[in-house]
Length: 286
Image (cartoon, rainbow, N blue to C red; front, side):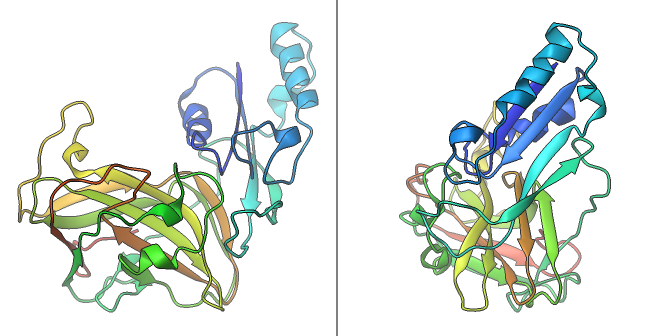
């Protein structure tokens, strides 16, 4: 039996839902709005007292006391609400939610297509190809390890392919691992692809919600990487990091695609232009 605890601003947060999904022993999870710290002394907050819960878990599984922990919700998550980009924010707005486990019942997947007019929508629209010049120095706006509070994403977005939804008319909640399915090519033998989802407020301020990346040589295997064939179009599939967010009315969801995330990932050494196929039957999608 295992009790796993993590935070959205910790580089190791993905292990919590992945362990809950794969373990066969009794498992309980807690995901809060924290960095790499204990929940009772966490930054950013809100802090919570967690040690009494852990004692009850140990009482049940080490001492055999029937205190009912296995009949309680298996996964408690903090649902984040929008805030302006701020690297010194002390408290994350949001609320707690209890789930039956992971994957949780009641969730549904929604596909948003990258379209030729640089929008995201539920219909793919006509086919097109978008080109991106490689700028190896960009990426500091996404922080050092896909954790921590981050500044405004617009400086990195300026050197990325950017796609946006229309302003939401009602709340849209995201929970889980956003998945990117890209149809991409490059004129070099090695390229990385990175995706960032952000919340764009009505005043234009852009806050990072989730991100992730992949080394193109590891598109099929991490253990046996292979160079890319220049000019060939590949299906590049990657999951972004585990996240929660509520997009409020008037806000937009932005997806930014780029080929560098320095200094988090060492840049690939070749000058290049990458291309992204959008729209149509086989275009890129989120």
